[in-house]
Length: 264
Ligand SMILES: *[C@@H]1O[C@H](CO)[C@@H](O)[C@H](O)[C@H]1NC(C)=O
Ligand SMILES: *[C@@H]1O[C@H](CO)[C@@H](O)[C@H](O)[C@H]1NC(C)=O
Ligand SMILES: CC(=O)N[C@H]1CO[C@H](CO)[C@@H](O)[C@@H]1O
Image 1 (cartoon, rainbow, N blue to C red):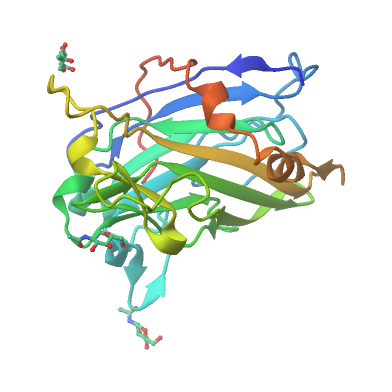
Image 2: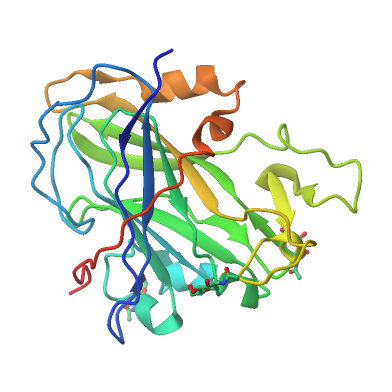
């Protein structure tokens, strides 16, 4: 298997008062060779708009995180692009990524400060589109006690338009639940949780030995606008038995830039 680092884009923070704090770090690992140089024909660079894409175009998606109830308005779950959700006023965090369609990519969110202060837990929702708004279900990230750090998100396209986003869980195959003192604990169907007390932070302490960066592995399914099949989800499900995260772990890199205001 040819492994090439395709892109490392990233990081914007500290958006203006009243807007969502924009946090973003992207690491994209092209697991297939021969994808470099493909032209990006998608001119939409923000998540709250509509577009259709072809294979290997860039595609902009957002991931918002907040307490679960903040994604609901009048008992209806809305897209984070919908201004009826007062996400910015509750300190929600937004990350924006631009992976290539049908390339297996790993997104990382390194700053998860703040999510440890809410006992009921923080959740994330992946989304894109406005008139054709698609959003994932809410997914638990963590609470005062635990943080979950690895996720798989599948983007399903039909004729190049995003139809559906869903989280794929693979339970506790990566962690052992044998010792309750262990830094990684099986949280049942939620997967492996890392004890917050063991997360590395800006404190030098030998007790805090674990990198609690959140990693989201992306995969694509369905068809692009030329009816070409998107296969990376199939590839990810085959590769899962190997630790892709181990491959990524030495590739941390980030660049800072300021992103515009996505929420009018
Ligand atoms: C809330 O939903 C109910 C029933 O769907 C509807 O009648 C009502 O107008 C909605 N309220 C607002 C503020 O949108
Ligand atoms: C945090 O979440 C885990 C998993 O859902 C749960 O077992 C635990 O009780 C929660 N802790 C608190 C303090 O709510
Ligand atoms: C020990 C350590 O990592 N200190 C860092 C804490 O964060 C500030 C601001 O990001 C850095 O400047 C320090 O080096």
